[in-house]
Image 1 (cartoon, one colour):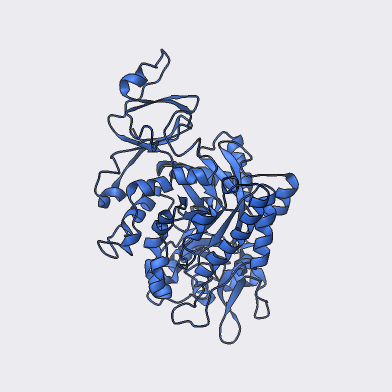
Image 2 (cartoon, one colour):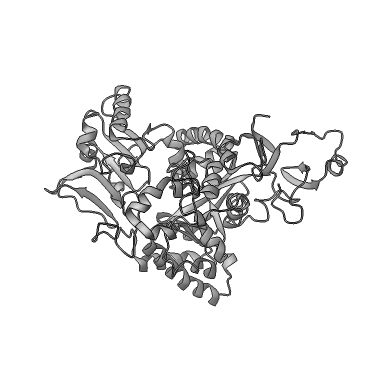
Length: 523
């Protein structure tokens, strides 16, 4: 399956020096083979273009593999038991970190406290990041290590959750997370590179051949070390966080700087929070919370100034926006920037701005991404993971939530990812979620959640291939199996376009090739 309109399906490929040089029938391609040509017969298995995760936190993913795993644990008690087990193996005074909890999965549906964690250990500072990535749960030792008291002022764009007497509860939202995370020791670049190698092997086994990363400068340093070691086996687009912008502009970095393995993407900005901690910035308040509109994490005028500066210097922007008010404000900023770009004679293709997540959008704003040429970078698995929270917090507004179908119908380019470690970085799970709007256990029912938002298998596959390639500015090199394209491909045990949708989660990745080399192979 080539995803090339000129030759949608072929039975053979010729590869040379990491690129596809011909595609066609067995007879046509075998006629090109020479004495030293390696012939690989896949026995009728299905081959698709390599899959790209267009939104991943790669350092966070690699480090999470070493942490306490509290991913979607069904109760607070399970999380505490896992912390207790890790504490028994960890010298007193050393930090214990973990990830993946969400109170939405617990019977009580309320935030935990520092006192809860203290019951697991008081001899170690503990920091557990929420599944959303927008909240921390810490114990008393961690609060002391960070110097957080009743007198500590909330940082701009963040909140230290407090009890009725004003004391910190142990929950830190949005920018307040930095107060603790900045005092947790980090691995060296070399240690992080080692951790990334472990994560990379898992990613290749899941069919990934490329990623778009949104983590800090430490991630880029470790990626460069992997490249120097000749161990980098994924193609990486590295986006630049807001704190990097001045340095990037001073050095003259522009999008696309680098090569086919490691290249610069765009400026990453956070416009708001997330659904889980109810910090996504909304036009109307959360259900049953008339005073809660969420948290904008940056002033709109500052966001406009940053996007304008970056665009003028050759960097598109890629902005996290989950709530409908955040999406609206980001679209306003992009509309202003598009006018500036048009005045300079620049087209939307030259500045491929993105909105990350677009988790809920006001119906009046739904057509604006396509009209402005803004890429909708979305994560289909969020819809099936979050639907219960969305129904609880947003109610009937959820019709406009987690809806790539809406954007495709208006003509926007859609790129798909996982947001790992928020969700697993297994793209086949994302394809299944996009096509069925159901969890693997069948919930919320045979038709899925808001079934009118379902995609075809072809549309979902393109989100992880051609859509991601366009978002990276590499649509002439990636996303298809066609002459001149990079030889990145995945071998499946069956044809995902003809099997029943319920069998999509059972598809097997048999092999993954990147740049003409088998990086993972079970054939």
